[in-house]
Image (cartoon, rainbow, N blue to C red):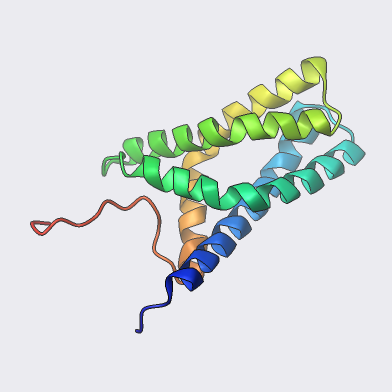
Length: 153
């Protein structure tokens, strides 16, 4: 199979990472905003619109951040779970807090929504990482965070 030009690979990675982030976190965001944060359906709608708009510029940087952190993961499931969770919480929770604050969450709703998102992202780190790798595969890309193969491997 011929090697794709670097620009095409970057564009494909951007599209794959953006698609994965928007699909996965639109669904989980609705659950968190409506149930935990107690936001109205109108507020949820605005949060998801704002969230989707913000996911476009942050999806690929998050994918790069995750890949970089996942290179530290061992081969065990527990190590992968830990590093995927660290990546997701450290990158996405601050962004999410801003999204729901701008969308109308305040006071205890903002705190509950942010803490709920942090807790949710701790548990969703690995499922999202696996989902991201699956979407990348659909786009013809390798999964991220793979350690380079050594000559002795």
